[in-house]
Length: 173
Image (cartoon, rainbow, N blue to C red; front, side, top):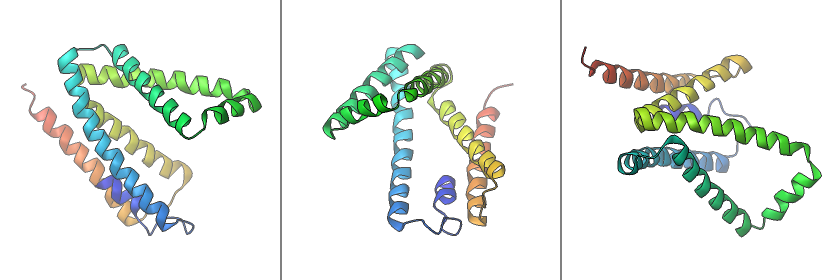
């Protein structure tokens, strides 16, 4: 809720914002939140059932992701376009490889966190990271934040703080 309030606030949006883009963005946000909830529960079940290592989880996720991406690119006739782009801009190959390698390291941290601490802890850590990135971006780039957006940020941080407090208060001393 706090994220939706922060992102969808109309008073701080650009004067060039298109209402169709806003509806699409909100739909994507809702879909992303649904996928986050589904993925966490599914990952918990996978770990409990098959006990895979972080590398096995990463390999399976990336194999399915690559297959789906290739299928979608092929269905839209974009495979050759991607190849043509790299032929015209060979310097981008290094950037894409570095991006992939850095992403792989990040995935190892994510899958190891899921395996060792559970999907809920990973989801909380990811949400905190996103929240602090947004706050840092606001201060670093001097973005204007409307009151409603600040309220959304407080809701996110407050909810996470309560969740962390509840989790630690249940741990026996």
